[in-house]
Image (cartoon, rainbow, N blue to C red; front, side, top):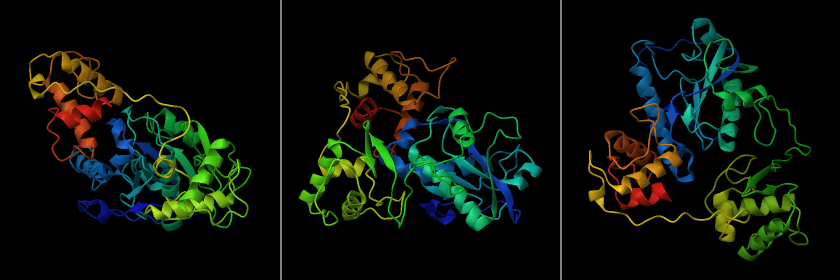
Amino acid sequence: MKLVTRAGWGARPSRYDLAYIASTKGTKVHYEGTYVPKGLADPGAHGSCAGHVRDIQASHLANTKENYSDIAYSALVCPHGTVFEGRGQHRQTGANGDQALNKAHYAVCAMLGDSGLVVPTDAMLDGLVDAIGWLRNGGSAGAEVLGHRDGYATACPGDPLYAWVKAGAKRPDGTAPQGGTSTPVPSVGGIARYQVVINGLSYGFGAKGSHVTEVGKALVKAGYGKHYRVGPSEEWTDADTRNFSDFQQSLGFEGTAPHQDADGVPGPVSLQRLLGHLPGKEVKASVVPPFPGRSAFVLGKSHPAVTTLDGGLVRKGYTRHHAGAKYEPGPLFSENCRRNVADFQRATPALAGDPDGYPGPLTWQLLLS
């Protein structure tokens, strides 16, 4: 479990003492219910997640209607699977709807929206299960796992996440918070025995194919083959997992238990580092047109490059600012366009230092690629 404490993400103090709660019936799963940029789920965007939690806390403390004493949730989970401590264990939540509902269940919020980022990542689902387990082990949460809409009239936590809750709130490999599993071969002895799919190809215990052999040969070539008795084969075994774990640790990844960063099951980053490419379905790289110059983006003026810019905003989901029913691409560089660009810049670590909404060469390249 990757846990960031309140001090770790820079929480502001509670407005007043939070109510103690000895135990709950279980946990309710929430989403933000507003626009969340798709870019927050990018592999390089994890550095923005703590700031995203601070923004949520600030919005809750500023909500005079609800008069929250703190961030409303017990915990929050980002698209990268990290659990951020909210009110925490043995503290009554403020998110479930009323006092009775808040006493009955903790509240875990996934950083998903009703637009933009709406589908949970596999890492997020892992993190949600981690958060539920954390509240059970340290906060005496009961066995129930429900959606916010269970018992309260709301769309929360959104249809994709609610479907996951109703299906048993399981990890992507089938392991549920209750400890059950739907996989034929569970993890044993601390060895990860689950699979991931990268570019349409499976990796992890039991995966088969020439791509598995390719990984094994690359591990041996890189000096990480000591766990093989004979050599790589077309079926992924525990030896492949142990060797890949050694390689992941050489990259600086930490945690060798199942579902941690160095557990021996590849992710796109470690696989790319080992092979120099990602096998599977080939994705054509987009051709980014030349940057037209800053003079193309003058507030209140039109330029054909703005239509191209708008296309990137729409494709990546940065369209929450609009004048009509939805954001409409066009040649006018409007205030809504500028604000949408600023959202993209804030969500992109390389641009977050100066999110003024005016495209420069790097903003243009990253938005359109």
